[in-house]
Length: 83
Image 1 (cartoon, rainbow, N blue to C red):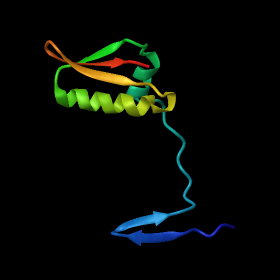
Image 2: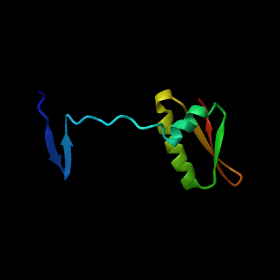
Image 3: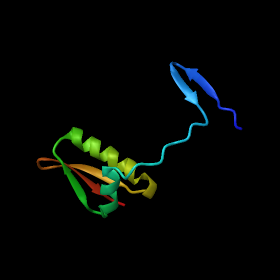
């Protein structure tokens, strides 16, 4: 039987030997990345929304090495899938 390690640093407990739960269903950004083609874009009204969506797409697209570009357009911002 494997010995479980436990250590506390700065009030955070580091533990080993804890099994990870099974992954949940795909999140919204993973679904968007799955259906988005190269040169497709998403419109965002605010810069705050742009950053939220951009980070979600980047993280969801990392395993597939997708690339995105943002730009200011009339009335808001857009995020394009490049790769």
